[in-house]
Image (cartoon, rainbow, N blue to C red):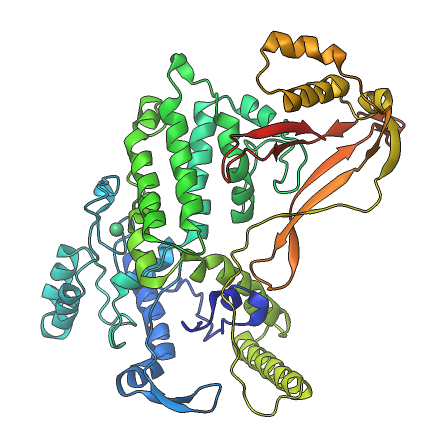
Length: 530
Ligand SMILES: [Zn+2]
């Protein structure tokens, strides 16, 4: 559990412990029950019974209020309510009591999940209708079963959220970037790309990616990866469009719709993760989804898919509304809670003697919490604070400017120009430099004039200093006052490895704004080879 009024910069750092474990749920499969349907019903009811027990204090607290003190010592009556539910698709279905395959939010049935109309996104399931059906359980058990199946919900007589004040489960299921986008949509897209193109060609393109600061290299390609993590999918997304930009489709089919679909999904992925939204960015988000749906038939034409009835794809149409309700998606990414499985469950289990572990795990977790709280208290007192003070927390840093960071002295003080060409694998360095000087002096020359002018340019030096690394730093959006590396440019001279094999020199390509460039895009940028 976490509470809503913690700034998200704190919440998303697991070390800040903004999430607390409320309890451990039994993992029993109830194998003693042989009837499979009954076993499923029992497991569902058990889950709801456990959560109902855990959340019971919220019923009275939400209805009548509880007294809570603020950091300044003022006491207020607060009404804590359950606001959001974060979980993956099976957990969402289990919690909302809807049928597997349907949308847990709006109840769109499996066969209709592929329909999309940006101006008519289905409204959430009717909470009132659901409560009416649940209410009939004691009066008319047989009618209850029929009514449940009529509105396509599981006949769970007492879901845990039934008595929680002001809680509507169908409005409260949050978007989930990790499971819905990275491990869902992007996983599909990767598979579609590999079925449309030649996997060996796609893998060969992965290998051509030069080493760089921001993207992991998949030197074995992406077709043979198994059990790809969300983090790996994130890395793959960064070059996925580059892999397919001139992809050849079977039967010489035009690749335009293919690339548009892939781009639309990637646009959606990145827009959905904006830390701040405005009406126009939300409009762009819906726009990206519309572009995918407008171009998606290419996958049908290619024989890769016959329909798009995918719950995760459908749920993307609810993102705009949910972001308006609950804020940006980084507020409730399951990545953070998945991480807590290690801290709060695996570590806790490891600390037990593996017999009657639940009680020991709970005690371990409780003690750890107390030690941490005490430690924080001591630190606060040592810092000289005697009365609680109000802390002005700055909003996340939006300063995206990059600063150049270089060593004062070059890596090599003077390298002869011809040596530079051989050593760093840049045989056209001198010509390129002359061309740059000539176009800087006179930008209106014809191509022929430019080529002639090259021979008149004399370089007034024979040696140049060389820097092997240039870094660009930016202020860290999470930690005020610190800077992190945003990107870097590397050159490496030819060298021999341990087995005396020659590794050729290499250099990165960078685009430099010569003063006429725009803030975004590459218009006006000159190409420079370091
Ligand atoms: Zn829906």
